[in-house]
Image (cartoon, helix red, strand yellow):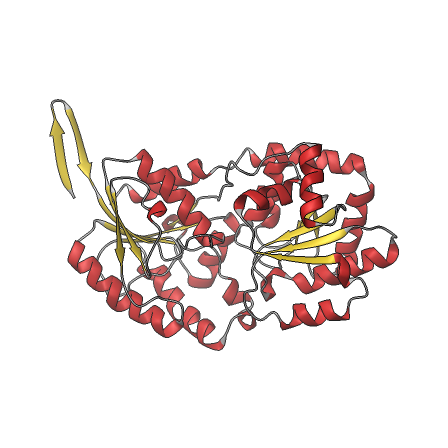
Length: 385
């Protein structure tokens, strides 16, 4: 850190190192989206400071948002617990010692325990503490050993909801004053569309029919098996051509999803799109009858904010951070009760007034969040260093 003086203007130039290993071209999800949106806002708003982005593989130049950003590749690609240790305790350690930044920001919560550089961790949730069976043996062993240590090592922690803050405090006995809540945002591309655009997106993705939509990676915590069970009950009870769109990549431990799908009588009405472009995703969400997003634990739940910003009604879980984010703009259900999920789908599909009410409430609720606010709050946490 050094000070510049020009006439009567004085400022201190900071050197900030950032873990950006989730900035992967055309593959931004949860943490990657958080990293992209907050850093883009931050570096453009603070051109007087120097940023070093640490990637674990060759990166797209689009992620060097400004002239004050330098991209640095550190190996090996950190995608396995053993490689996590190598990457953060050796590669990151050497880079911090070489470049001597004032602070290291890690947007996925992973820190370097060996370094004496001040470190700010963004810990999004502790899902592995609540549902360890949802991740592999090696992953949960790593998380359970290292994350309590990361929380204690961090000079400061940011997290994305009051739910996650209280979870970190209770699980790791971290002082309340060491943790700041900085909510997520949603991209401006998520916005309402007109009826012609809705018909076009239905023709492209749902055979021209109305549809419910799930958005996110396919993995156990997202509770997709129960969503499929609820949709099956909805179809059995009501003669409607309505579809269910499942939008997202196949992640891990998907056998239960596949087994449930294969047993369905109406599986032809479930459409798996895989990963889609941001432009298509925004229109798919905006064209849906409702977003059905019912994970049993979530640190925030960006898809429900994206849906609210599109004016799309939301059905989501009454657990973890989701009620905190949804406010009065969603039908909240018990994610472990497929009958309750089905009842919410029926209520929204056939009640136009409720659709309109939730749509309007969602547009109001979504106005409380933005990536610019997130970036400003994150910067406020970085600035003291």
